[in-house]
Image 1 (spheres, rainbow, N blue to C red):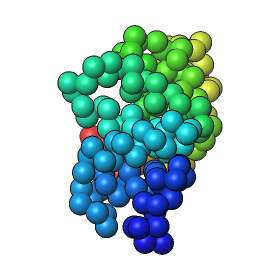
Image 2: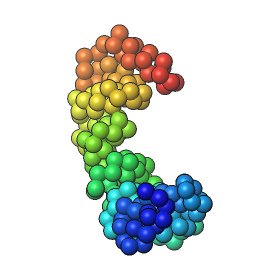
Image 3: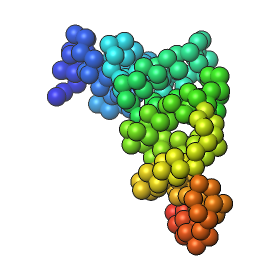
Length: 195
């Protein structure tokens, strides 16, 4: 498919073509890089419920520091994408609520969005959900669940989850204390780059 065809389909209202055109303008692929054009096409696709365009739109709004209603727009578009199972948007919302960035800090909401991302296979969501269970923030403290989600993330190579498993065994939190296993997890994490 060539640029003329994509442009024509986008102008005729095809949300996939609009999204593709937005990406092309954002990245400068086959067209000159133009953030205003990228924004225009992402907005058109997002308003037609294109989940990836909604996510990209939220990302663009995040970089626009002087944008009026910035926080509301970012949260709105990430949420629209997240409810359509865009895992990256689910993770972003989890982080936003956990840290109180652009939204009021709300650990229950953070837990909800990390759980959605975790169930969709995100190692970051799984590790973060493990932390929420381990700390008892937003959910009742449950080391068995923390261990489960750390193991899911660790199986995907998540270094933070591997180190967290080491901590659980080191402290005997929800598991039988096992210094050798704790050391093995800590060593694995350290060799993978965790300080």
